[in-house]
Each structure stands twice: as structure tokens, then as C-alpha cells.
Amino acid sequence: MTEEQQCIQELEKRVRELETEKQILKKVRSVGSLDVGRIQKYALIDRLRELELIKWVCRAFGIKHSSYYDYCRSKHQINRQRLELKAHVKRAFNLSRHGFGSRGIRNLLKTGGIDIGRYMIRNLMKESGLISKPGAHKYKKATTEHVDIHNLLNLELTTKALEDARRR
Image: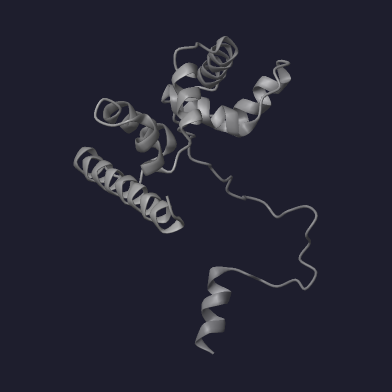
């Protein structure tokens, strides 16, 4: 076999690969969008795995098939530590009467001896459907002059004095 024939065979193989990828992408568009997150891509691969080889479907999505297999293995395992952290986050959220966000919950858990990052708390809150609803911040109305700031110029800043200044 000459070099030209080998080159032609490689090109024909590449054309078949591209045609297969094109067919997969057509099926993906009929099922859903390509602009989705990694987990959603894995779910689409689950749907399309019966129609085509997983290797080709993963290549169409730009995902290594080994990472897809890791995902399949991990989705059947229950992460006990994550469940415990989720329970702690829910408990702290309920203690705050739905007022704490990820920062407040982190501080509350840290005082309880549980060291966890804010972003992990945020993800656990999303998974659990916890949305903080803090109350409105109420400012105190000043009724007296502040002790540290004295009126050194002895200005009369009343509404009548201001109106007179505007008229001038």
C-alpha cells in the first residue's frame, strides 16, 4: 500500500468520524441544547448512548469518555460527609429563621466547630432549595446631636433658616 492510499484511507476514516459527529449533533439539537452545564451534558449522553457509541457522543460534546464513566460511577455512590454537611447547613439556616446567607451560616457553623467554606455552603443551599430572606435594615432616626461632632460654627440649621438662605 502506497503512502497516497494510506493517506486516502485516513481521510476517509476522518470523514466517517465527522459524519457520525454531525449525526450525533443533529440528535442532540432535537433533544436539547448544547449550551448546558457539565451534569446536563452527562444526562444527554445517557439518553444518546443507546443510539451511538459513547466514545463518539462524548467527543461531540467535547468531554473525555473517561470523565463520563467517572460520573456514572460516582452518581451511584452516596457521599455521607456531604449529607452530614447539608444537614448542618439546614439546621443553621432554620436557626437563623431563614435570614442567614452563606456567610452567616459559615460563621455560625464555625462557632460550632464545623469548618466549611462559603462556596460549599452556597452549593449545599442550592441543592436543598434554601433561599435566605433577610429582614429590611432599619436605620435609627437621630433625635439628638451626636456627641463627638459639635456644632463649632454655631450654624442654625433649621428648615426656616434654610428656606431663608434659598430665597437670597
